[in-house]
Amino acid sequence: MNLTLLVWRQENAQDKGRLETYQANDINEDMSFLEMLDVVNEDLVKKGIKPIHFDHDCREGICGACSLVINGIPHGGKKGCTTCELRMRNFKNGDTITIEPFRAKAFPVIKDLMVDRSALDRVMYAGGFVSVNTGGTPDANAIPIQKDVAETAMDAAACIGCGACVAACKNASAMLFVSAKVGHLATLPQGKVEARERVRIMVTQMDAEGFGNCTNYYECEAVCPKEISIKFIAKLNRERMKAVVAR
Ligand code: FES
Picture 1: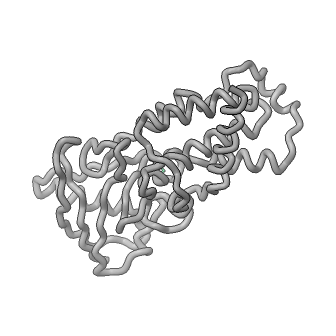
Picture 2: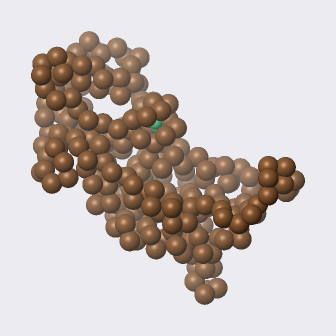
Picture 3: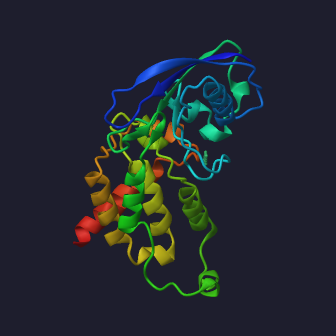
């Protein structure tokens, strides 16, 4: 298939940036979206044009690095799918595709389609861990945990920290991300000990990084490649309320 791409090019965070037009020709419909960009880049390099910078690592939906907005939707809008898992068969021959970086104040553009998402890492450094002694693996296995509780924790733990929730939200809120991390740990006995302090510190760091607040647009849930439910945002608010009352 042959496609026209409108690609965001931006030299650095200070540059204003602009959309540039490229042709993607002879694209195999079984290619992933990133493989299609690889083909375009090979062509650009042959022509002496700087290749398009974009982020990626695992290319199998695990790392959360592939942060692209495709036709206005983070990860392209296919349910439960990251950009690297998106196949070109989801487009039609002759389509024009607009490709932009995740846009949020807390995600400054590094170059072209690549943004700095270390704000999410700093939220995790602030409190997204268990620091009490929980013993070794046999100790963890010795603690009986109800199946529904374990499944809830695993649902939250599926978050790959890609930041699509932030990019989709008109407030650039990171509440779905933070709620998944808080919800994962606060659900399990090993994480309950520090739950109140954790939620307080992580929400404080989230605010300090410039993320907005949740006003229930549900866009985050709609674009999340791991289909994290916004019920975790309700849990985050409950955990936060408990922490405030306890203080
Ligand atoms: S490159 Fe790792 S999730 Fe897409």
